[in-house]
Amino acid sequence: MERESVYVHYLIGDLESYVVDNREKVEKLINKKDITVEDSIYIFDRFSNSLKKTTALIKLSGEIEDRDTLRTISILSSETIAWVMFTLPSVEATMPLFMENLIFDNRHVIDALGELLLELDEFIENPERLSVLNEELYSMLNEVSMFFGHLSTMMKKGAKEN
Image (cartoon, rainbow, N blue to C red; front, side, top):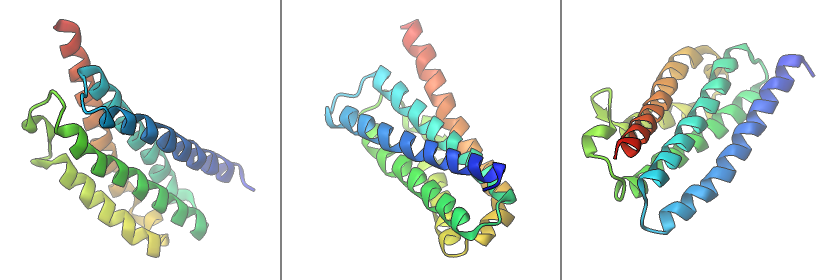
């Protein structure tokens, strides 16, 4: 196994375990129905970090030739984006942010995530396309990741000042 391949498989395992572990923690926070500012900060940090880990895989996909590895990256990236996309409405209903804070690139962040999810789903059937279109996808995904990181930072600053 090549050195790059080992690193890619490490990143795949890291993302998978990070998402599984944090999905459970976020679900517990949401199920308590009283999401605090600190809970929201935690959730947005986890969203941002999950998407950052996903961008690392997408960025490396241009160097990967193995079809199965590209398919695995597509599936795991799709699952990660779906987790964020379908969890956000539960958080959004109780979080201390205004709706306009979730506008990204003149649209709701869920719409941006939905677009990414649709693109990644296409790569599951045609994984070779991922290595060709990875830069555009990386850029979009990185922007969404930074968006959640920015929300978390804003909330941290607001929580300290209050």
